[in-house]
Length: 142
Image 1 (cartoon, rainbow, N blue to C red):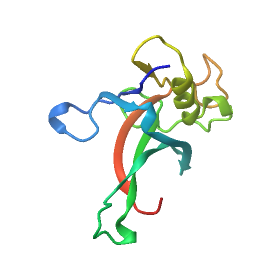
Image 2: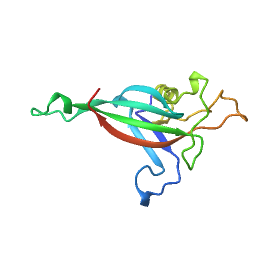
Image 3: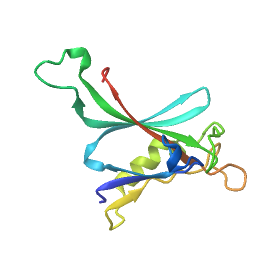
């Protein structure tokens, strides 16, 4: 089994512009606690909850203790944020590509989380999906 899951972020943002520029993001498999899908107004994201807590010390109030979250946005364009057509095949949901990468045996250090097709998953009719952005954040509601 691989030690890392790799997310290839595809967009037209340059490194000089900062933020969510096109790059590879590696996440240690041992740090992944949960993977879930979210859909809000047609925007598909994979929510990866990472192990460990943020803000814990002897002085921290309970409301300030939280966990790390990786939010990965899905697009059907390799250069822009284009919302996918409603995904109707459960195996094509973003979380499933992460689960497949976590359980893959590629013989290397990293396994790529490669997205499938949107809609009904029919090649030639539906669009290939890409990871458009990766945002790390903290959440004290975990």
